[in-house]
Image 1 (cartoon, rainbow, N blue to C red):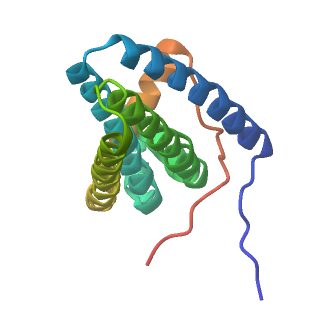
Image 2: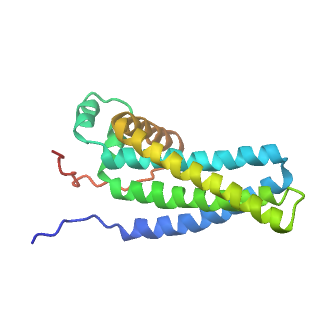
Image 3: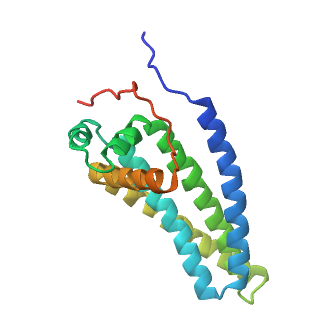
Length: 195
């Protein structure tokens, strides 16, 4: 029985682990400070933003996992801006999925839970009433996150080529203008054609 060759970039895994630690620490600190100083309305707005970030990256991760590389070769041949980076995304689909689902997705879910607790603490309630509010808002938040991710997966699959292309455009802009090269370049790593 043949085994599949899977690209495992241990250096990238180390980088993503360290990035998760620093990003989670910074965002937890930032959200905690922001929420404590903000009004209740502003706090809910910040919470919505955190949830939205997780959903957007869910869309990108799904699009990259379900996207096809072949159409972008013609675009790259025509030197369309972002096409080469779109191919790069697809050839690093496993790393992109880890970044989108595990790093951004999980961090946003954890921070949104902590943010919700900070919001509930703003209400002048205690005891059983506080527990009811925590359970109710926690249920609503969980429903929004899970429902949002379900919708995100559908969007990511239906519009995969468009999403991958525009994500490639963003990566190309970051590399050209800020010198940020996020993904390793596997020139010989061609994804198998899907039937």
